[in-house]
Amino acid sequence: MNRATTWWAALSLAMKAALAGLLLFALAHPHWDRFADKAMGIRAMTYPIAAVLVPVVWSIVRRLRGSARYPWDVDALVVAPFVIDVAGNAATSMTPSPGSTTSATSPTGPW
Picture 1 (spheres, rainbow, N blue to C red):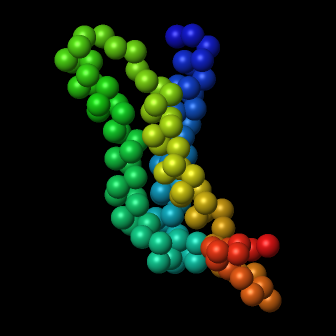
Picture 2 (picture 1 turned 30 degrees about the horizontal axis):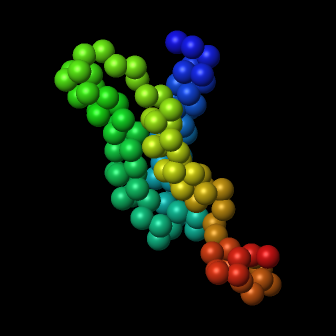
């Protein structure tokens, strides 16, 4: 493995671990405002599919074509949006601050 491949492999594995941890955290605290009414149960069932999509496709391609380099970069980039989504929910409740007239998700934003 070259240096770039090692970096992508580490990033991919870290993102998959983060996704698993964040989903477990959300399932452990479904009553918190940041997770309530956000379909976290459905996300917990479907987001792991993103984590196994590239390995499954790669194993099929490898069987059909012989040896093939594992696409760590693609793997990390496929999982990234799901990690960002759940991390966003975990980081904030997306509710307005006391005294605020706009919510964090309004078209005008919180500013």
